[in-house]
Image 1 (spheres, rainbow, N blue to C red):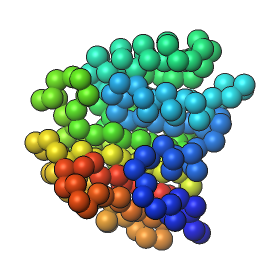
Image 2 (cartoon, helix red, strand yellow):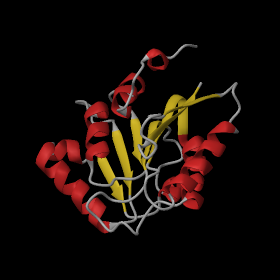
Image 3 (cartoon, helix red, strand yellow):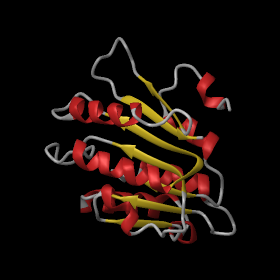
Image 4 (cartoon, helix red, strand yellow):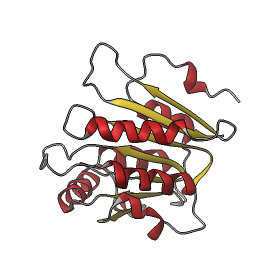
Length: 197
């Protein structure tokens, strides 16, 4: 099966790819809420009148969850905000709170540190790989794992190497994995897509 986004050249914003995968009413997971921009974008994709869509958001930093909640307060209706469930736990524990019978169409990771926050608090390869394995188990057929990996800070390249190794080992009959990298900007973020066939 050929995915429409494979032919889209010059992609720098995963949001454009997400829109090919996510539909209103879907369940999606923001594995790293940060300042809430991805959470808000996901909510706008899944929200509909039935209120059956749901965004599960995770972050270990209370500040990130406060920022996300405030952004939602300013951007959506109270009814829409009820479709978002925020958890102050590590993304590696997503299966502890997402119901067993709920499969996600999208699990998004925006890795590194909280913009505007403490730069010493970063995502780490060991928990990110556990989270990717959990995302793999929670992903619906036709769903997407999306990861923006920042390599310009200490620990970023190690995390990228671990994710690339994880994706490279997935069976090609069941998964399509690709990355988008800016070749003339070595410290630019790298986008990795893991699509479940």
